Image (tube, rainbow, N blue to C red; front, side):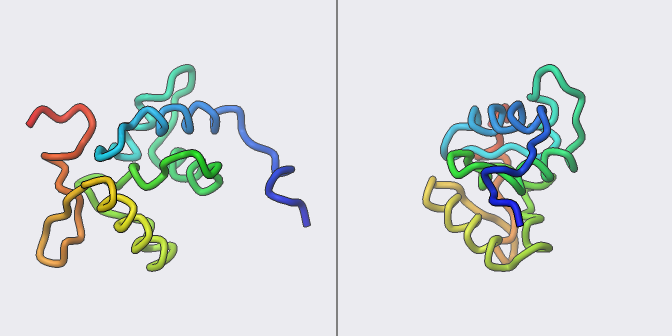
Length: 114
């Protein structure tokens, strides 16, 4: 089995990682926003998710959320959802909803005037 260091990486993965690194602490961007932020490639939100699945440790993946502030990583792993929520809370990100299941996008979304 190949080690993680030798896995082939699509050229556009680096562009996704650069866009995610540009999201400041305490802020979030949606997968679609990140796709739009990537220069030199036309990407979909799903492709951003694929790239983030293989993100290096220095990429703040937790700052990328689903539309409306949801944490779709829960479909993959409740433990990863908990980790994402804790990392975001550690950056001062607030959650809303009856089960605090959504990021307060009005307060934390990159590019949101509010």
